[in-house]
Length: 283
Ligand code: PRT
Image (tube, rainbow, N blue to C red; front, side, top):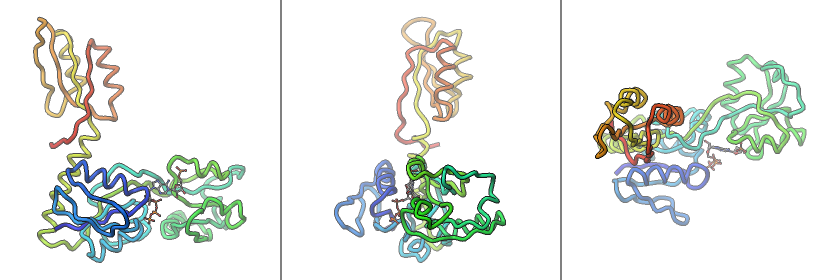
């Protein structure tokens, strides 16, 4: 049985369980349960605080876990990132009162910075040869400048609303983060095999989330142009329509190119374009 640690409650919990669900693994997350056996895969889920997970993985109490990259960077735990998971994206940033004149990194010299991420901040200050004082606060870091406790803050930012409503502006990004699957470096044979199987399912789900399936109709004389726009995984599927001289073309399109491709398809005579989500994608 593979043991995975998932955040008990908070921003990572829902995305983690949704990812497992999309992998065909159902976990009951009711009440104050500390652990639950999943159905659909030999998996035991241990519910922990996000910040505690790196240590549990490092010590081999669990085989793997889903955490925010920022937590791993801060903990410095000796564990491996197996896969970026594409949710709970945020950044660890430096911010200061919006009326302050910011003229580059040297602004921080001699300043006091409030943060819950002292190790990541210390590393950044050292790398940039800055001499600032770190003021450790657990929670509500953004109010520190208004209380006169610090000149600036180093905190997680997602939409930027918290900084804005506290009269702060973001001036430097220290690191970017998203949810990641991490694993212990010492796994026995069975755990390693199960983890490989889980990773295979996760990758199939993540690939599918990045692509859509496209079906369209086009006249024969535009087929080559359309194939150039939509090369597909290997090459597109082409089928004749009942109407002579017309074809149906099926392919996949990546989310990054999606709207550009749709515009180009329309401009090249594609009609009746259907876009369908893909559930799993295995190369
Ligand atoms: O208690 P536990 O250790 O389990 O969790 P946690 O204290 O890390 O709490 P949680 O659930 O708040 O965050 C879990 C993880 O979600 C973090 O470690 C990040 O990897 C990720 N994440 C993504 C965020 C945010 N976005 C985020 N916006 N974590 C915190 N925030 C906070 C931030 O600290 C600030 O207070 O949200 C506020 C800013 O948000 P915006 O949208 O106003 O910019």
